[in-house]
Length: 344
View 1 (cartoon, rainbow, N blue to C red):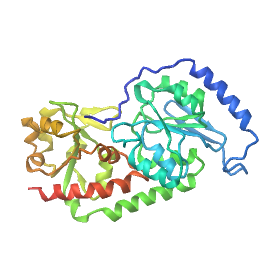
View 2: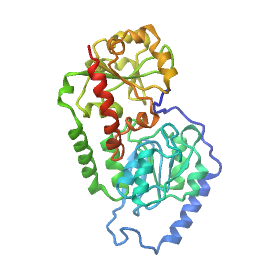
View 3: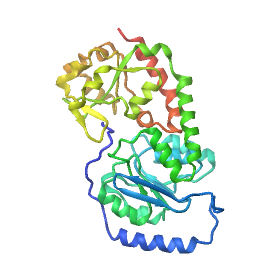
View 4: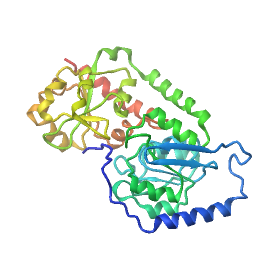
């Protein structure tokens, strides 16, 4: 049931993509040299993005954008740049295979939906190569050095600043905006998101503490840290992270912004007024809540739990972007209100 971002080393299908990508990119550059782009008059300035796996040098405003990981596609779309391709994310996708907030916005813009390809441990390099990208955005992803070395031969590739899956949502918006030549709009997008949260926040919720937990099956118990995006989403709506979360560093799982404290330490959450989590279905919920140590957590016992089983909502509530925030708020708040009423 876990949708933790996984940074463990994948087995990449490396083919001859590196060499082929370099040849293809060179050919495309020669063929397009005389065409006018959106800012061909010289407004776009060369941009170099240094990151954990190398650096990306972008010399022309990208038009054909490919995204990996999460969140970058949403920011690009909000900037009016619909990716030609993006990593598929089946958890929460609609019948077309696209995440519903992306489907809705792209359709509203009258644009074609991005092509979807396999990512993660089975990254489909051939599919990315066929898309002929000008840039590959992966600032919030788990791509490895091995994958990056292949991708950067296809197009300039932007990876994460330090560790996989740990960029802040604000930094991601700034990074994507800069790469696409719209850095002047980054602060505007961030301000719009902050305003969405401010308008929705409930001041009376500030007195209530919460922990956002997850499991990797029976006997496990993990807790997300304060700045992890799904926790930040809840904080922005007015709730307060239980101070005990700041005492869990010894249990940290690198690359997940979380601590795996284990079910044996469930009593660490005894002062959390609310528990946030998710379940894949009714059977999964029954299995996890049927564990004595888990069910003895006061908030669980009282029913002061926010635990959506709609995969789309679970996914959207873990990503702070210009498209997900308004989509989540209208669906999340009723669940929080119900849980607050059950606080003992």
